[in-house]
Amino acid sequence: MVNRLHLLGQNLTELKHLKVIAFTHKQIGLKELGKLVICQENLNDKLLRLKADFDIEELFYLGTCNRVEFVMATSKPVDRTFAENFLCALDLGLCSENMRMFLDAVNIYSDSEALNHLLRTSCSLESMIVGEKEILAQMRKAYETCQEAGLTGDYLRLVMSTVVKTAKEVFTHTNIAKNPISVVSLAYRKLKNLNQCSNSRVLIIGAGETNRNISKYLQKHKFSNFAVFNRTLSKAELLAADLGGEAYTIDQLKAYNKGFDVLITCTGCVDPIITTELYETLLNGETGKKTIVDLAVPNDTDPEVLNQYPVHYIEVQSLNELAKKNMQERYEELVHAEKIIGENIAEFLPLLKQRRIEVAMREVPEKIKEIRKTAIDTVFAEEVQNMDQQSREVLEKVIAYMEKKYISVPMVMAKEILINS
Image (cartoon, rainbow, N blue to C red):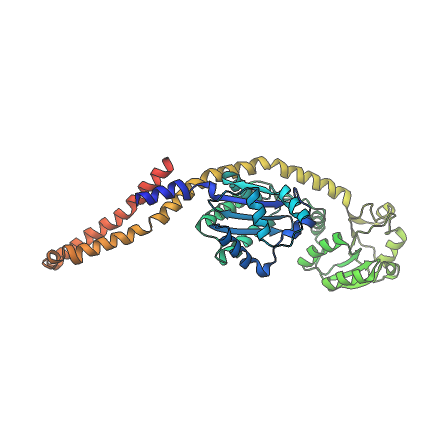
């Protein structure tokens, strides 16, 4: 038992077993990074084979649009040569030029650096957009997929527990994700503050990515009355189909006579397309105050429209300034986030040591029960048989009490020895 505890204390509890091979957006373009993403269909089989071939104790894979990472628990040294052999074994059909590019850009983390990297990643400090929470959900899903496939064990379970705990603390106790920094989310927030009802008539001019993104917010919040205008009708039809709305070419704006409550525009036009003449036509005789969300650069709305008509005007320049301000505030929160990460790293090693003690001590209760049974049924069987019923009951109570108390003694002592050492 002493030798087993010594091995657990000296080897299995060491952070040096934690390794990460990471390919991220910081060194690799997103298009190239996509070549490293493993198809979900054969992901588990491929990872199980790699785990066996490289004698890795535990393994999980994280693949997103801006990072591909392999997190492992192994006593093997993980260096550039290991990464090269590992990458070749993935059998992704990479040419020699791509292989060199990926190996030049690879980041390899070990022990406390690996844990620090995982915690920073889960808290979005390594993301393209600091403060986005999606990465934590992606990490949890990736880990759970590999856990279900039998790729991970107790070691990475503890690592992921700390990863999740740390991210939750950062997102809860700092303002790193408090204020949105995308123009689209800011635009929708301002629009939402105007208290438009869900059946408001929404005209969408332009079917590009920006308008598709803000349409998702509108659809999510039950807006349902859409008309989409675009230079190419087929693109307008695609967006309108998603929204359950009507599709038109942009030339048909001049004849549109169904009125509107909200006008969202983002085109690539150099000159304003929402002129006073067109705006008057779109009003179709209505005089109430309308809302224009202009996300185009330069703006699609002629300034004269704002001078002549009552309008709630949401435009991209002020949104960009607010986005920059919010981003700066997020970066100012990095100090607080990194402090929380440091505290969790400091707590992790004792936690890992305690868990290893618990695993090692699982046999203790069973061993004690065996000794008790042997003592009563064999060694002192005759003496016990000669006792009266009341004496037997007292003996049982004494033994049960001692058994219960003794089980905790080696556990507590072992924890104290390892933590203090």
